[in-house]
Amino acid sequence: MVDGAPLFFIILAGIFMQKQIQFLLLNVAHFLDHLFMLVFATLAALMLSREWGLDYSVLIAYATPGFIAFGAFALPAGWLADRWNRHAMMVIFFIGIGASAIVASLADSPLQISLGLFLIGAFAAIYHPVGIALVLEGHERSGVRIAVNGVWGNMGVACAALLTAWFIDSGGWRAAFVWPGVLSILLGVVYYVSAVKTEDIGSNFFSSAVTRAGRVATASESQPNHKNFSRILVVVFLSTALGGLLFQSTTFALPKVLSERMSEVTVSATVVGQLAFIAFFAGSMGQLVVGYLIDRISPRKIFMWVAALQVVFFTIAVSAHGKFAMVAAVGYMLVVFGQIPINDVLVGRITHPGIRSRILGIRYTITILVMASAIPLIAAIHLNYGFGALFKLLAGAAAVIFLVVCMLPLNLAAQPKLPSAS
Image 1 (spheres, rainbow, N blue to C red):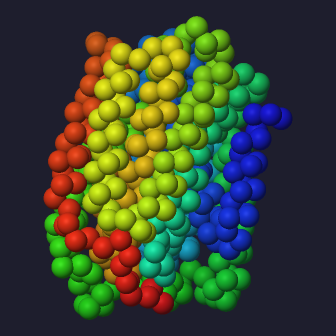
Image 2 (cartoon, rainbow, N blue to C red; image 1 turned 90 degrees about the vertical axis):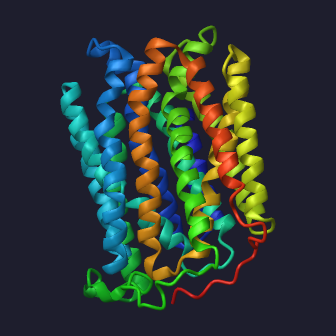
């Protein structure tokens, strides 16, 4: 099956890049997290709007509860992981999101699928504060590690369009929820077995005592790990909010953007999915480049370049059609994805392990609540003004990110010395 080849090679590459099974499973979890959250975006654009007789701008609003849950449950998930057990939370993630996807596949109306998407969002919220904290755990130079993990997440975004479109053309839209759901449940069992074996914790797996970095932080651990802690945190949270708008607007709307602006090329749902996959895949390479550089160059300098290029590519996208629309898409996905590891690495450098999931929970709560609010914004702008106006808004948001990043300390080191998580 040709269209399944990218997923196979992603998994194979992960095995060769990192043989530690838990890191591989954390990467696959990131892949599934973003895949599940964007299956509906492609379904709404290419199938359900016709099947249920609703305009695209009306139908996508039913995804809002899922994204609200994706954000609202992130902070509680981070708090629970810090005080209880991060590995157990990951088992709950795999099984919960898989079961929720199967529930969503049973929907016969927009309201019913909205309920399924809410459940998906609630379990999807676990990954970023918990999984990212596990990826950062015990690593001083985490840029490449975070970038590799981020690429897996981006491939989840890309494969959401690719695989969902393939299911539409070959097996029906419900299968786009069912089969990834079954896979996720099985991986939850694998993660449990792997964690038990690695941690040597046996029947005490669900005990709060078994997570080394998930223990309650002591007073000393709760202290900032950088003299400019508050200042950096403000930059992280502000750029996170605006970055969430950029990420959601591009990833959610891209299938529709390509369908409209490349109408002479996009003859089927599968072609749209393939073009979206190419744009996401090419863009994800920016994340690897940024991850490599951030361990060697000042994050402030890298962040300013990324934000400046966001302004450039979104401005080009305002009027780009045909093949130029695809070129612009590759460009803005390159720098939108490139921003992601910078904020996570900054959080890893200024926080101690005992409170890291909570800080990450706040960061992703901000990101995802903005993402949820972006959906009705996309719908309203598309309905009244078209995608050109949306890209103007995104260019302006990127310009604000550039100004916010100027607040970062000039002397922010590229190679910090962090305390061990053990």
